[in-house]
Length: 269
Image 1 (tube, one colour):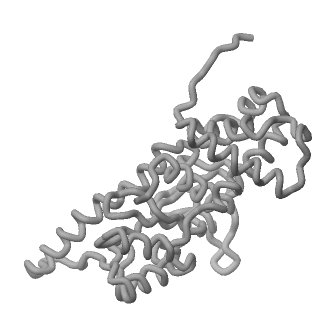
Image 2 (cartoon, rainbow, N blue to C red):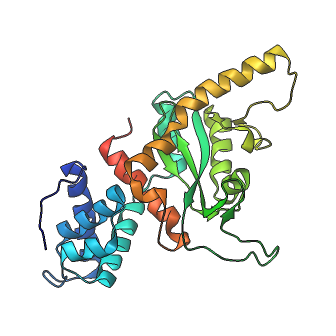
Image 3 (cartoon, one colour):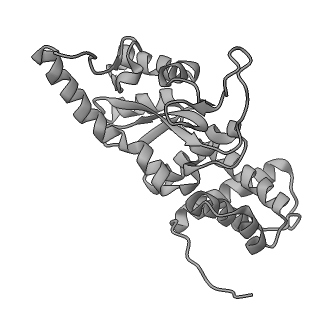
């Protein structure tokens, strides 16, 4: 067997933050000092390696000198500890308005997964299969600030759910409409959200549009393009989001945890 040293591309401050959250969780559970097979710091490294490198649990468990079952338990604990600190959309929008945001960007993404062959009891169709993407996964709604940094993540909906339906089901649509009405902070979205209602601005559909509508579409597209990079930031930074190999119901918590890690590396001002 060959041993070697490796460097994890994550700031030390992020590892410290997660370690502190895990220590707090152990104290909440009444876990005694030395009662665990690995320290909170070692657990934090395991969780961060899983997020950053999409590392296999067999490798992570072996490196941490724990069983695979314990490794998964540690991973889920870390995910939950992070996800619990995900920001509330209403509070984010209020803070953004105070910070001078002119708008936010709403977009949905499919987080692919391997384990989700569940039939819809009403239609018989595969609940977690996305016809748009031709793969299984979960639909997650993401709100980004005008600079394109993700600021809020919704709970997961099955991959067969349309973006507009997912925004409604998760409560994101209602929060954005309220922000537009009460704070004067509109949301920009693509044509998939057409019919979302007041406060959510989408491009005008159709051919041979009036020059005013064409100009409006171009303006919305330019502003939205900047904001839509929030999804790319999450998925490129945390490679585990490219395909979740856990229960699909965990996709929402995993994505929220990734958001907390992203915010830790770049605090939202």
